[in-house]
Image 1 (cartoon, helix red, strand yellow):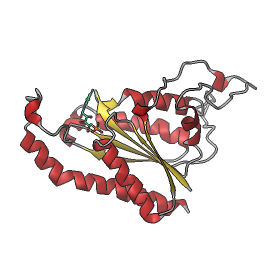
Image 2 (image 1 turned 180 degrees about the vertical axis):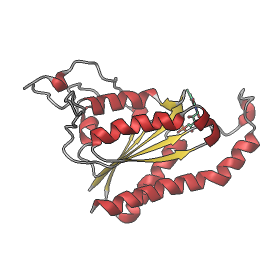
Image 3 (image 1 turned 90 degrees about the vertical axis):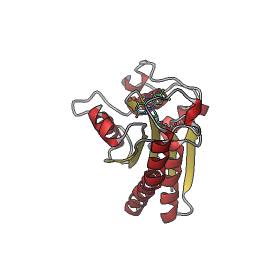
Amino acid sequence: MKIIAINASPRKNGNSAKMLDSWIEGYKSVYPDVEVERVDLYTLKYTGCRSCFSCKRKNGPFYGTCPIKDDIHDLVAEVYDADAIAIASPTYFGNINGMLHSFLERAMFSKNTYHMNHESLAPKPVPVTMIYSCNCTPELAEKFHYPHHWDDLEAEISLVFKHPVSRVVAYNTYQFNNYDDYDVQMFREEDKREWRDEHFADDRRKAFDTATVIAHHIR
Ligand SMILES: Cc1cc2nc3c(=O)[nH]c(=O)nc-3n(C[C@H](O)[C@H](O)[C@H](O)COP(=O)(O)O)c2cc1C
């Protein structure tokens, strides 16, 4: 049994990473011996899809796979063999960040066919948990349509991975240790700290619980 946990934040121990680690802990609480591959995308050199269409060339050697040989070459294939995966992303300009978008282009386009029903070439269903962290409060996230962005993305992911996507969100995240050192007039450090102390443990708990539910359903 193997799970893959992908951190799309440049911060290896930031909000996304902590949420992701809770998801891993949750899974391990059910399967202590599960093999865990944890990946920090920002440590890897890669591009998004290069539109070569090798993955769609009839009878071609790369049909259904991505031929680009860079640091995510193996990972974009391995995610389809995993028992479950989790992907944690900070929100940049209202959506997942660029590194994750590039990764998903590569991982998903090769399996996402141009057949009439967009049938997926994934060999089996893989439960995916999407973990988002954002500076916005839930109210602001709603106002700026973040849930719609997530719905759209998760619809694509569930189609390609052949399984409904689970979602966990951490709102109003604490961004840096000393707010006084930064020009952030919109926020008060005390408010951010208070929210973090009141909510972030619950957010991590939701990531943990989501993983336990998935793990219990696996076998
Ligand atoms: C380039 C950049 C753009 C951001 N844009 C948004 C945004 O549009 N909405 C939001 O809620 N937070 C935004 N944020 C804040 C981060 O998403 C938030 O602090 C997140 O929790 C950081 O996660 P991390 O600690 O895992 O890096 C942005 C941060 C950066 C660096």
